[in-house]
Length: 254
Image 1 (tube, one colour):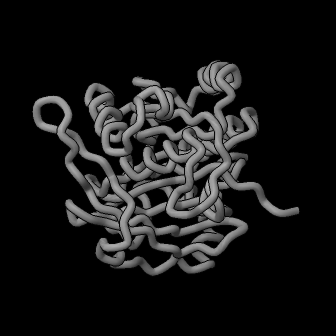
Image 2 (tube, helix red, strand yellow):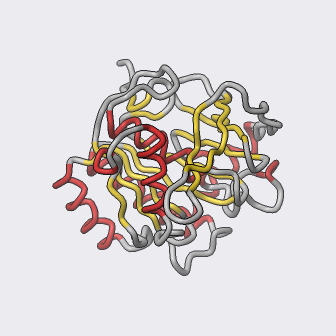
């Protein structure tokens, strides 16, 4: 059976994902652009999309996010009402009841894609290095994706060494269907597909940052381009490392 896609060969219609990078790498802006294209039903970088309602749980920078939305709408000559719904507070991904309650609201709205920004804010009290704690979050995220019949992802930060992947537990890499890595020099950057089930990974998508004049000082919009510098690149983790992480995650959940 051919897999279904929200964004062709990038975001599956069902599953979970992880988007990560250093602070200032514009991962939030990149994920918002992806979600906005799905929500509006317009192509993303010439890739077909399956239109559907998207939701972003904005648990960091929620007070400034409306300005980002106005800037994005102005840049694309659309109305803010055409953009994904924003939840301006954290949803506790460690709390099964809270996740279940949230799923009911998502089902009412017919949401097909949800991103939680960020993992740290949506997993209060969790030890990011703990396979057990992160396994708990992953289990609830997978349950939510299955419940709504859609895709759920988290935005996360990089660790001290980007060569070791996203910050904290290695349980994430074997668990997700999609892993996206963002890097930027402040004005331009790239989104690299680190992992993608049922399609070829390692594609690189350049972008640039633009300041759109809204409010007093303007706000940032991530703009698709082919002219940004290529990603510096990261060596993929060895298979044995991924297998060890997967086994550790399974053991922790027993």
